[in-house]
Image (cartoon, rainbow, N blue to C red; front, side, top):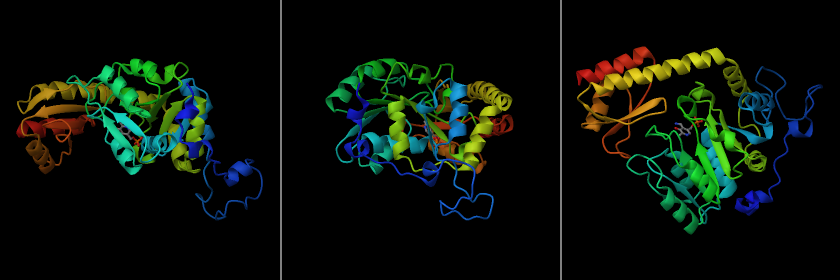
Length: 338
Ligand code: PMP
């Protein structure tokens, strides 16, 4: 597979910005080259290549640094994928609704047409149809989210899509740490067309820091690095991500709490008459179908419990994030009172 054939011609020939730190990467000296303010503690630009963070991730995931790109959240990575591969007004991407809304919004921003091949009633891929349409419409990127947001389930046939589709397969693994399946990162060497995105926003607890990761073949990652703004992730946030990776105990403790709370919340929801259906979840949230979801949503707000109304995507559904034990107790108590 020739990745370069999928890349927009203007990106293929793009000469990336050369920052002051690219031109002089040393650390010793009087730095008068970046128009920084000489005073203060946050006065210097951060490392544009995020070397320490990438090396820490590479060690953690058994990858090479050149297979890793760091984004300002995975939302930036989604946007960069459009800007690298999709010619505005010409190229198409494929999504499988119901799924994460930013694929479509980012397509709209970039003036890229979206082909939707909805998931089936078990929220699984219509694989054959997807492949047929992707080929017929010369789709550039197929976006797959596993575990999927807002449904919570894993997608089964990603391997088939990776084998048979000749464009880019962008697998969004924002919720991978909460699930029973291994990341596709392990298959990067097998599939040159695979991009896996992950984030520090969920299981690592750093949503405020805006740190996302893209993993792919070095050839793909090189294009991401070419297109990203030079200082896209602040030094404070790079450090926060490194610290989060080093805190293995804290990570395990929080993950264990969220996963055991998820089971408790599901058991409690099963006993409530207002809840009609609980969809299986492998993420840190649970999607439920209930009677009069819009009313339930409003009445929960009155009780100061805020969930996400997903009824425009799937009729009468609410998506509930798993909180602390105390927060979850308040949720269940409030639902009981309705
Ligand atoms: N992908 C999915 C599936 C998500 O649900 C989210 C956030 N809700 C994102 C990506 C964006 O994550 P980030 O905070 O890394 O931009």
